[in-house]
Image (cartoon, rainbow, N blue to C red; front, side):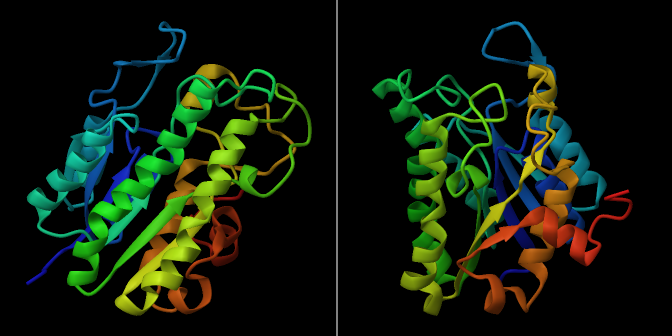
Length: 275
């Protein structure tokens, strides 16, 4: 019989994923976390030189500091076997999963390319890392979710899925391939509710808005999207923890897009933010 609540958060070495994992731990969840970067200080940008802070080791330390248990798993979205193995390892370690947060995204070349520049190889990588891997993970876990009586699936999408950029790339805009992949990903949650809502599956889309992360700071891009409100990663984590714990949320929000910054502000979920 299940005794502890367990969450599985992908892409949790830094940024939104780390904040969500810690917020879920604070809400009483043991948390399996996955990412490519296992050890803080070992990640660099695509230039192969610029360091990016964050690793699953420090995320797990923060989870453990809450009194809950963290479990790190190495995972690469472009390696389908590693994605499915990560789910199996989380299940083997904790015995069950109550919340799946699909937060990890493809971080390689191609996300910031124009239509003319977007070659098939980049588009294929974007869809593998932003849609196909997540869908495979859901399919892999779905039979177990149904057998145990239900689970909550939270998909971290992007406003690029449904709004137009205010300018070109470099002036507040984004790549067409990234927007296409996030738009496709957004369709999963409502269809999950249609197909499996009566079997205990609850699914949500989270729109985090503009969030200042370690990767953006390393790229010196933290001020590029000033046309949009920005928030720290902890504001998104607070919204996710509220969403999966509020018993009234499924009736109002299941299958829809939740604006994380708006809900955190409205509900006062993160003391001290906004100032």
